[in-house]
Figure 1 (cartoon, rainbow, N blue to C red):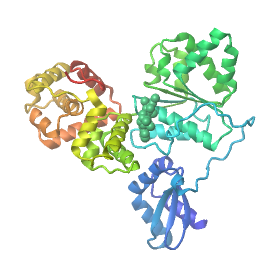
Figure 2 (figure 1 turned 180 degrees about the horizontal axis):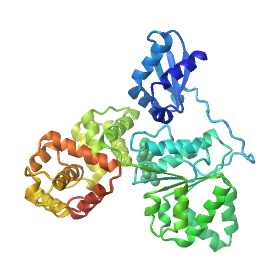
Figure 3 (figure 1 turned 90 degrees about the horizontal axis):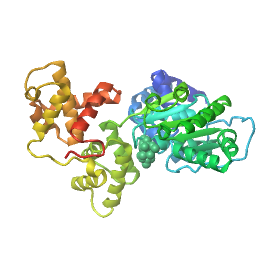
Figure 4 (figure 1 turned 180 degrees about the vertical axis):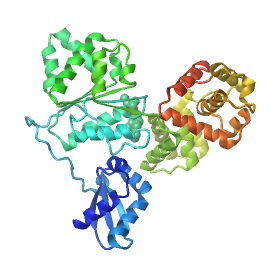
Length: 447
Ligand code: ADP
Ligand code: MG
């Protein structure tokens, strides 16, 4: 055992505190022989991540402890087959027999969740909540459609069912919460409703809370429900398509309740991560994608659901045909449908420059000229990003439009992507205006 600890200590000294906490929570040394060291981690994605990012540190740590190189492998608990729950069963006040309150989608687990920079905060938060109930209360996850919020809620549910069967978890959509309440009021059974949502449970998860915007009566019941649960140290998990403060027509007391715990955001995957996700999904289904293929998929999707949809269809089609670039394009078109802008005629550039010029208050002719001012640079960069993402222009087409070289176009797109990832409100706003002007939304086409 001593040598196990030595390896862990050597490794830990080479890794920043934040990364250690983020990635090594489930890490341990499984076995050590003269010829092989086996490490174990919680799931396949952590395994992949650690092997990609920390190979150097692993090798150094091993060399430090053994004075020579010893090969190592990292296994994940699931495929290793020796899964043992790490969570020590906490003594609940009253122990109850396992009762299944909610059905969870078996596929929506932490193990099946692909983690990247865009969602790691939400992933870490959810895992933390599942392992340490009522520490962060409430836990509030928000972000756009198809980014994995529901998946994470179910993962918490599945995790608890497996590791803490005594914990009574109730998952409902906000719509169901409302319907149940309305039925209870009609049927004169609000006492039962309150028992169900307050006393009979240990964890309450409500999905798509934005559904209750403007529904004042339901919000009051929700407020009292949450208060009761918090007072009794019961975990609440909520998700929404927007931040608590953006929930318009929500009672301020509820909004401040939401903000009391941990609020985390899931972002859109950047292209790089989108490619990884596409490849991971494909690999799981036994098909391999080239970089270009993965890129085409990632560039056509702004959320994980779409990527998954494209890959699923591709897997289906590839059983009949070999995967080619043209098959990918067909499938992308099938799945994304009208998301893909219809090519506009020659006037496309003119029309686009007109829109940019009105949004940024610059002259169209300045956009492809030499002059550089902050305003012009910003108009060009956002313009390039936008045309690439929503009009599917290639870097070289954009280079021609803006009279810039390939690398400045790439730089501009990366830079804007990064600002969006950081949630820069100005950039978002400009893009939203352009979408309106050019009639492109995530779901609409350029017409
Ligand atoms: P949301 O609730 O945010 O709209 P969902 O949780 O319904 O999104 O996710 C949409 C689909 O994409 C689901 O099939 C889900 O399993 C999948 N998905 C989303 N994010 C991930 C992820 N990080 N890893 C694996 N699958 C994901
Ligand atoms: Mg959802």
